[in-house]
Length: 174
Image 1 (cartoon, rainbow, N blue to C red):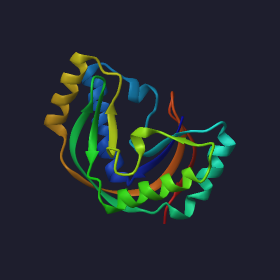
Image 2: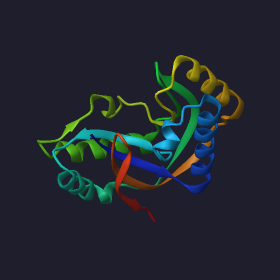
Image 3: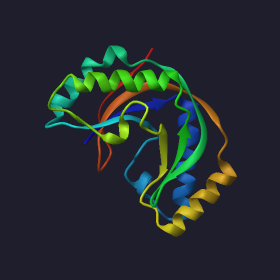
């Protein structure tokens, strides 16, 4: 599984990292910190046969990857194990999703996840993962206390592999 991911400006990254760290500390679940998962928003997830082909597809979409503003408005869960910060799907995110999806469909051997289709995905930043029922309650309490809506700037994009999260390449935007 490969991910096309958006990364944020330093201020947003610091804020989200603090939330991740606080959740890990209060819940005792260090999945995010132990696996060095940085704050990011997955634009799409796809299957491909090898790193070389996946990287080639990433390079083909490089000119379409643009900096933009997102509004991180709320928190949510993917029950039963994930808690996240949710971004509003604005025109920037919609166009990015549509563009990346179209580029991936140009390659017949690529299988795009059904959870990351344009207008069928929830733009989110995972803050805690593989949480137990009790850890989810604690994580939610942490976010009730510390979460505030944020404007964020996407400043770079990457292609990563999952389990564990490993960036293959990152491009910084002007």
